[in-house]
Length: 118
Image (cartoon, rainbow, N blue to C red; front, side, top):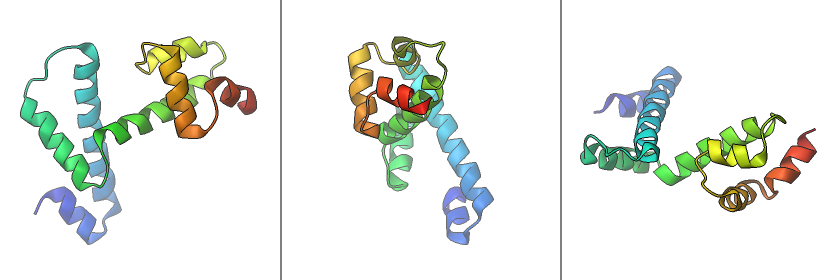
């Protein structure tokens, strides 16, 4: 049995947290490779990661969206950054795409979120 599965079955929170951190770090590594445009070292690693994420009941897209939403909320709290800059920092090439995604996640535009947060 895989260590992560054993930790989940035993109810160990530390094992689960360690598994989540490992999974997140692998996701970040893959995301950085994808965003940078560099080829992945092992295409099987991406498929393996997709399979593990699927086994957890989610998808890479959902994890990336979750990370982007958390980042967006944090970055939108900094008034020194324009919404364009926030979109760029989160990997969006166009403000419109970021605005649509943010509204899908939260029900409000980034500008409205920022205004209401003050």
